[in-house]
Amino acid sequence: MKILFVASEGLPYSKTGGLADVVGALPKALLDAGHDVMVLLPRYKNNKVESVAIRGLTVPSGHETLRFPNIAQGASVGGVKFFFVDDPAYFERDQLYGEKGVDYPDNGERFTEFARAAIEFVKRVWMPDVIHCHDWQSAMVPVLLRTSYAQDASVAKLPVVFTIHNLGYQGLFPQSLLDQAGLPASLFGMNALEYYGKVNFLKGALIYSDQLTTVSRKYAQEIQTPEYGHGLEGVIRDRAKDLTGILNGVDYAAWSPEVDKLITANYSAENPDGKRTCKRNLLEVFKLPVQNLSRPVIGIVSRFDEQKGFDLIEAIAADLMREEASMVVLGTGKPQYEKFFTGLAQKYPSKIGVMIAYDNVVAHKIEAGADMFLMPSRYEPCGLNQIYSLRYGTVPIVRATGGLDDTILPYSAQNPSGTGFKFDSYDSQSLLKCVQQALAAFRDQRIWRTIQANGMARDFSWRQSAAAYAELYARAAAKRIQGTVKTSN
Image (cartoon, rainbow, N blue to C red; front, side):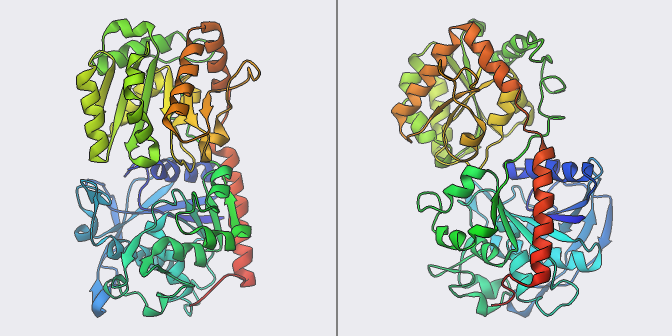
């Protein structure tokens, strides 16, 4: 099967979150399974390309104007070909979606052009059997295919699978965006893009795509409820029969302590000695005293946002600093949390090290050198770091939500096969109690080694997930042939 991935970011070319990891790894797994896969991304600043496939592609824009992006080809990665929509005015910026916590005001126009260019790409460069779109930035692909391109015989029956990586990000814009981006005014309706007086890109994808997926079984259930549906739970329930939760996989060629080239020493479940060497190196990187080598080190690698549970950590920070443990934190995001962690490190310089940055090398060092990994998320569609942590023998402490609930088995005396520690209620005292439970287990190294071994034995490779996606692609193609999905507004 020929599959085109359309996404706003993907490794190794661009990344702000877990979406990039998926777009970098899943195509390779599908290729290994015998499928033909290409990836289309925006060309961001510093993305190198090798050739131009289409020069000056004509794309309609708002106010009856035209734009002329190029379609460029980058280096193949693991046999997967990467193409780019190249429009410097739209995409050659310092960040992908916005700066200093503020979205770029023209994101609606930027990613509408990206979607139009994707459709023209399949018409002019490579016609797939299915398009796999990801998150709101690619949502206009299924919308435009079933409206503006509905009478175009070359693409009218092209099936679309759409993956929700995080329902909290929907692409909300004022009604005027339709005119600014050259979208049909008829799309502003309850059964299309209208959402409480605004334009909602993600809603359009939920309505017009053939099959919907999200990145864990638990999250697929959660987003049909008011608590996690972010106002779209009714739309999602209407498409429930077409929604599948497929857990993200992990690229163990990049994220395994046995082969990781970014850590100080390699190690395995059978020969774990290198983990202590990695812990010493981690303390050096964060300039923490060497005496912390005998204490548990709790690691955090995250975007700083309310979603990730940092309000809970802030509420119990003083309690955590009283524990016989240290902490290393890597991330960027909301200024209030950057300030919180920086201030905490200044107040407790021997117990917590903080880097306000995105640094892939340091992220690997935390996974390898920390004893525990903390993810107290309010909601978490899938999460990858807790899965990485399992392989590195870094015991996860998580809240029972989304993919965190699907991937971590709670350890207890009654459940010695557990792989981590988990709490249910979203409150600071439940988090503190869970951390203290993990710290108590650490003090008994026999128990701790059992928990580590349990986690390191788990297999979350992409092979099984790729097979589930392949089955879904075939289902989407069959549905499009039968004509059972909305085709126009």
